[in-house]
Length: 147
Image 1 (tube, helix red, strand yellow):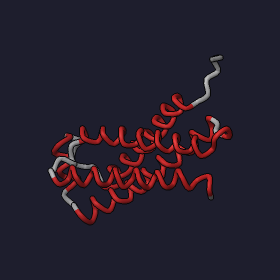
Image 2 (cartoon, one colour):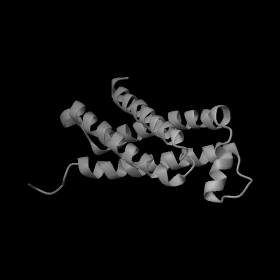
Image 3 (cartoon, one colour):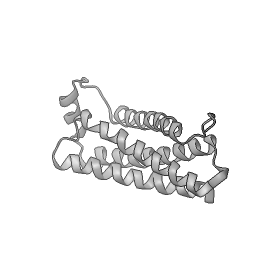
Image 4 (cartoon, helix red, strand yellow):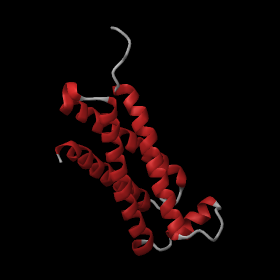
């Protein structure tokens, strides 16, 4: 359990930050504009960076590329799942006008369902997690160059 407690903790923290950011956007009624979701990627990258950084400090000489990337992926996947559950609850129970507002902003058409929007959020979160973990690990991997 000790090996995954740090990524779980950081994943939950990232999800809270993502939810707070989404709710702040909703206060200004700009949460239906997809342009603002780009900050989600920066939140994810920073969260995965901190996860891997702390994991490397915790592991010491035992740290490896595969262990670091797994820690980053776990934290990002947890953040994505928790945020997606919140998002599904938000668009079905709290603000049922979200999808019509999204359709007005983006011109997707009128036949987009709650499932399609939620699936898109999940896929985007998982894709951002994988890309972020691979990118962050370039900074933390051991160099093969002699110093």
